[in-house]
Amino acid sequence: MKGLILAGGKGTRLRPITFSMAKQLVPVANKPVLFYGLEALAEAGIREVGIIVGDTAKEIEQAVGDGARWGLEVTYIPQPEPLGLAHAVLTAEPYLGTTPFLMYLGDNLLTGGVKSLVEAFEARRPNALILLAEVPNPQEFGVAQLEGERVVRLIEKPKEPPSNLALVGVYLFDSHIFEAARAIKPSWRGELEITDAIQYLIDQGYTVEWQKITGWWKDTGNLESLLEANRLVLEELPPRLQGTLEETEAFGRVSVGEGSVLRRCVVRGPAIIGANCLLEECYIGPFTAIGDGVRMRACEIEFSIVLEGSQIDSVEPRIEASLLGKNTLVRGGMRRPRTLRLMLGDSSSVEMP
Image (tube, rainbow, N blue to C red; front, side):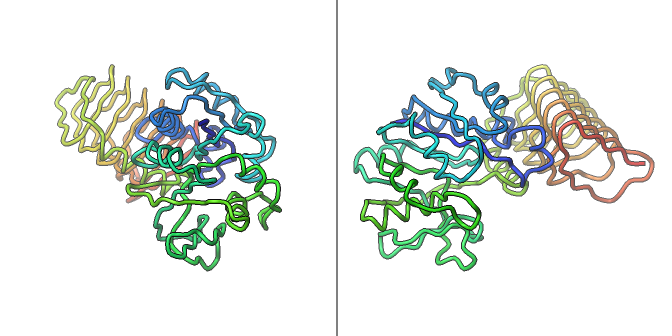
């Protein structure tokens, strides 16, 4: 079995961060989202992986390389335009050939990996196996309608969802999916929808099976979901103190990277602080991820993500539910607002008078 990871798309819901970086490389708990998918495929025993890339191809290739660090053989497959998931499947057909494959959306995170799905597919050999999850907002996803144990209908982002069962961004297919993708027409969005391709398989009498996710799953395509995924990953964070803590208290699951110095700080986990950071007189609250080389002084932050090289200096109100891009600067002043909520792209600068 081969793997196919989709890492194209423009990431419009995460702008301005995605003006300067691929959405699949935005870190969760200081690790790019895409790397979690690569780890899941490797753990499932998949060795050959194709990655669909678009405008951010160079950045993705630089981050992933040849895949050797995960024991993978990675091939990059350009998709000229993001014309839908089924279009991505057709784009990858020369690479995939007749080999069954697992398709994984590169900005998705799920617990438990995909090993059990691969084992179920290989044991029963359906034409397709889809993964479903109960969600409170099914109108934002592809939705499945079931009759008993059988999938009868799939709808992409319906205005009136027939159920609350959303398609998780993991699919397993045999080569009949290429026939289906060629048979369908573009949707109202102008895209070849994978839901329509799977519906074709159902209508033509092919075997489409499903499994319900038992853990959690997040599509990290917007700020709220990204912060929630960060929270869920940090809840399983192993404590690890490799830096220097001077007059600093650390409570709960806290990870501090090599070369980092914390002076007169309070850190309440779960929280992760990268390597070579300098934090002085700061409060770091739960569910916070701070990247490498960050400088912080006289500030409070929680439930947030701060990317590498950023600086936060003398900010009086607590920063919450925020995402700060690489090399951003947030500096306080004499007059300060009572609260802050920020989403800053790379190299931003914010100064408060």
